[in-house]
View 1: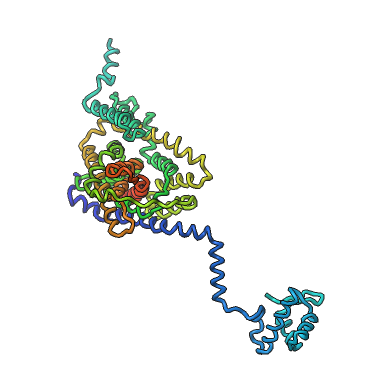
View 2: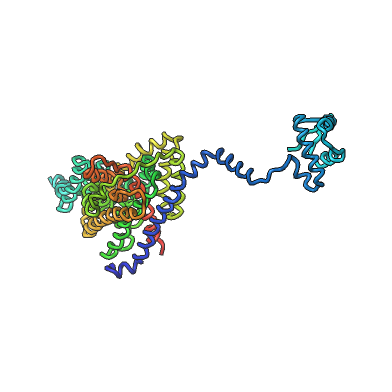
Length: 142
Length: 376
């Protein structure tokens, strides 16, 4: 004969099954509730990811310490005088255009009365700040 | 003359007794409720007719009933006994269900969880009365108000109770408009019934497409035993929402679910042979089923009131009653009761959220009960 009453419930672990059952149902639907509450935000973020990346980039650029001129990192170990001359040369090179010859650079330096030593130009070439494109033409590293 | 008399003795007229007669009356009542009252006609008419078929008296050995090996009905009933039809019905349900209201306000899903209390309290009640644990679990699931889930779990745990449990589940689902309103009114004040809920947000297609995948993974990882039901439910929904498989979704929500519903209803009805059905156990099952529905409704309503203590945008507690997963009948009942108080208050959309989450909740509950009943 089957058990009845509380004995039957205890024998079948009825109370623990009930507790686990109710908890699992709540946990399942609560988990879905949490995920679904945030899902539309994630989808919105995904849909506007280009905006998100540009915002992120602008924030990261802000955080980055800006170099005084391109290639400055390559001259970090050089004396300050060389760095200063390189900065001035960059301004001149930019004035000429994307590509330039060394004679163009030196002529412009003389014209603008900027004192440039030939050793600085050699350093810029050696360190890869100005890169040869052949036929005597150079460009400034980015 | 001898042959005539011998044949006459084997006809239904000669073999009928009060039990068969009563069951035929039950079948006619179910058909009447479906046809005249429009209570779940898609289910009650095949079931009611199945009850008539199952209770045509016949002599033993002619192999015509669902219980006779080799009979046509036995093969059709195979899908019930092996739990094949319920997942197919879930596929159709998934393909026709729009989860947007639930996605728009996921908090309402918790009402679908609260309403599953009826399942577990009825499980305790059935144990208390003296049912064996697998039988008690099968009876408890009636409170989920989810016919396919009830049949699925009962087929696995207590196949000998399939008849009374499925008839009880579908009858009470059909009687949702009668059972729920008094409980809803009893547990709420007029002021609460008048609460208007804020408009749900528009849910983008991408969100609706991702949901079945996330929903499936999360629920089945938590309750792996519910995999047959959830896999079909969420596959059906993915077919619908992906937009790439409209033809399959269309078949799942029309031809497939309709065919399976006819066979399921008919064979479940035919399994209610008087000798198997008219027992004291069936009476208890019907009583416990009613209790289960009442507790589920009350739990949903009371939990909605509880949530109102914490939320900024108040919830009309009536929608808690839709946590029982009789989709969409209990949501319609919520709308009906709300409109009795205020004709311009439309709660149907809001009630659909706990309603469809109730389907998920009852399937999780079935998975948990199945797990406990098959593991030592």
